[in-house]
Image (tube, rainbow, N blue to C red):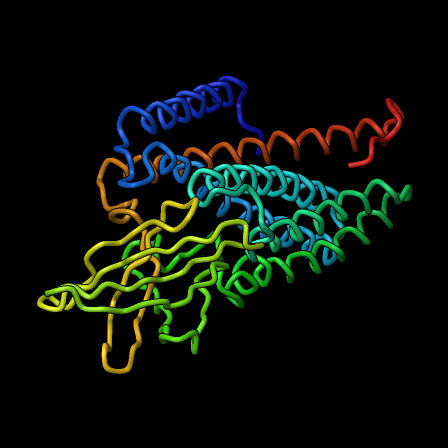
Length: 328
């Protein structure tokens, strides 16, 4: 069903105003995330673009399956349009995530499991578009690309949700960053008997001593490639049984916490913690975040419909011999 022009213009205007309001709220209404400052605001954009990527690729696969079943041209056009929207938002999620990583963890890219998997996903869908451009015959192009799109959709859940959790993620310590979750940490032993890893940081216990009511641990931290080596001294309160001083990791804003000690055995449980409270614990932040999700969803739907209509227009013009068919 075609939307009347006036209503369509009104929807576009509303989406523009809504997204402008989200951007303004990001900087004027959302408070700074404790320990991250303005860097925390990028989550308002990063997370919605990431989940819309998943939705758009799933919709694209759905229409590809419909096309293989019913062989209707508009279903192929819908699959292509949804894939293009998903690819666009995937790029936005990757770029915004890299910017956030540079601010928080001190590096744009280090082949973190999430970064690697999303890059592979981008390459898979880039191959989908390349396939469509390489096949001249219309029916064969639609059939092959639809079959390939189903393969791509099968890989998507693995690349986005499974692969990043196979190994500890240095740039996505979700257990430290996401509100309500908890890291397990690693237990270190004096004398180099136990060297462990937090994310991609190597940690080694060099000293453990009691200073009154505090237990002080000396933990050597080595960054990837031994670019930097630091000796951190987290402390633990014996009376309360909780971490005290939490020094920052080199070049990062995440902190090293001493969560448990055994002076007789010379062991210490160390962990990674986020600098402050949960990002969405503030109501203004949560409201702006939900508004951003709604706005990006509406924007993606508008882009999808616009691109699908354009592809169908190209198809009709090509069938009438008005223009040479443009590869979709």
